[in-house]
Length: 171
Image 1 (cartoon, rainbow, N blue to C red):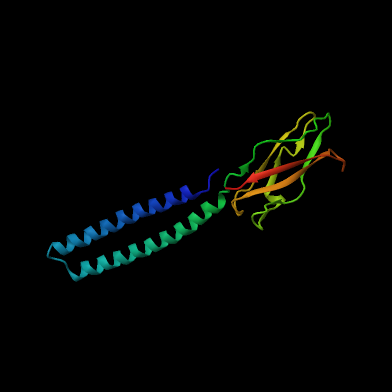
Image 2 (tube, rainbow, N blue to C red):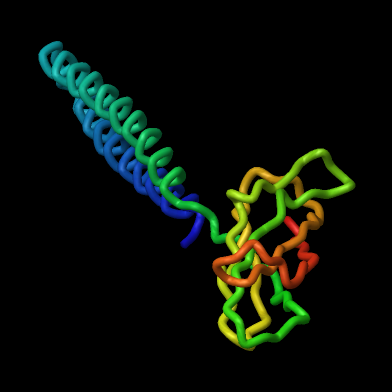
């Protein structure tokens, strides 16, 4: 899934193409009437009305494109950042639950990545499985490295069997 900027830009390109085509036809029609030498007040009035209608249509289409572009962009969530795999040192026959101990922090900025912006994949380790990774929401965080820790718990109990230090680099 992309950001939606390409789709929004395409809408503006299409609007620009329509604008050039519609206005050039109108201007060519008016110029042809004027060049004919027999341009009457009635034709001028009709051309003026056509111009006003075209201007109104242009304004409506621009307003529509602003709303449409905003809708397209806000519907597209950027792809999350994915870290390389991390591993718990404790391979075991037990199922284990993974829990981020708190927000990811950086000593370089006051910014933090809250736990709600981080997904552990998988959230549960099967017996003898040790690897997991983080998927981090990409938007709104300073472009630095963040550190944190993941608690590894015996499934269904509060018993911590390991702690894994994790990090992510936000571009």
